[in-house]
Structures are given as structure tokens and as C-alpha cells.
Length: 189
Ligand SMILES: Cc1cc2nc3c(=O)[nH]c(=O)nc-3n(C[C@H](O)[C@H](O)[C@H](O)COP(=O)(O)O)c2cc1C
Image (tube, rainbow, N blue to C red):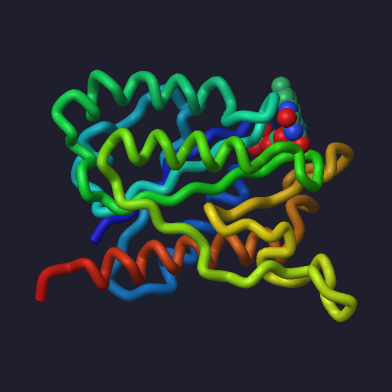
């Protein structure tokens, strides 16, 4: 079983989140993962076609996935969508932004629509929202309270070694593990 993680990152913060998704995938036996950075300019379309799941990730720029990620989406039209090469593959998404909210939901909605247009099966988070009670804190899993995908927030004055914080990275890992478990569950016996 193979899970690809296709992501963009301008300054390394979303790349940290992508690495955490990969670590979560690796918690499930028998599932391999591959990180594919759209910034590197070469998309291994054959690897995506051979994957059981594709997880999409991008920083939120101007309230939407970054332009490089959008370019990947557009390129997939000719290279995957026309022949519906990703039909019935599992899909999920994650995003990271500077503001606590930052209109990140729109990025996840954009990825969900993209996956739906490819005939993919979207997997969200089954986590309760964290940091939503007097006993909660920013260290809670899913502290930003998302269901559609994993969210992370990165302070603008800190580099990727310091931000996003551990709880956001653990939330990303949780999503990766959930995608891997879903892929396993969908395997024919
Ligand atoms: C062009 C641009 C647009 C941005 N737009 C938003 C935005 O709409 N909302 C937000 O919260 N942060 C916004 N940010 C901040 C980034 O989301 C934030 O710096 C993020 O950590 C960058 O991730 P990266 O290091 O993976 O590129 C923007 C940053 C840039 C460079």
C-alpha cells in the first residue's frame, strides 16, 4: 500500500506539517509513504497513479492554497483527470497559515472539491475540537478545531524549527495515520 503526500511550502512551515503526516502514515504497518514537493518542479505522475491514497497539502496564501499547489491541480487535469486515474483513491488535506484562522477552511474546501472532481474518497478528521473549554489549551490535539482536514498555524516571526507547534504536528500525524488505516480497511481480503 502506497500513500503519496503532495505538498507545497514557501518557507518550510507546511513542509514540517507534511513530514508529520508522513510520520503518522508510518505508524501503520505495511503502508509506504512518499513526500512529493511541488516546489521541486517534477511531479512523478506514475507514482501518484500507483498510490492508494493521495494527501494534499499547501500553505494558505491569500485565503486559498498557494499558487504552486494550484498549478499542480491544473496540471493534473491533463495528466490524471481526463482518464480518471485517481478515481476511488483515498484523499485528505492539510493546510497551515500565519493567522489563527487565516481563512484556512477555504483552502481545505478547495482541496476537497479538487478531490471530488477526481472521483476520490475524502477522509476528514474524526477528532473533537481541542482548546474549546476552560480546561483546554493550545497543546490539545486539533486545537484549531477542524473537521475537513488538518490545520496548523505558524507564527510569522518564527522559522519552521519552532512553528507550527507540536499539537498541530501531532494533528497532522493523526490525519496521516487515519488515512493509512482507511486504506488498509479498503483492501480486498
Ligand atoms: C503571499 C502570502 C499570502 C498569505 N496569505 C495568508 C492568509 O490568507 N492567511 C494567513 O493566515 N496567512 C497568510 N500568509 C502567511 C502564511 O500562510 C504563513 O507564513 C505560512 O506559515 C507559510 O507556510 P510555508 O512556510 O509553508 O510557506 C500568507 C503568506 C504569503 C507569503
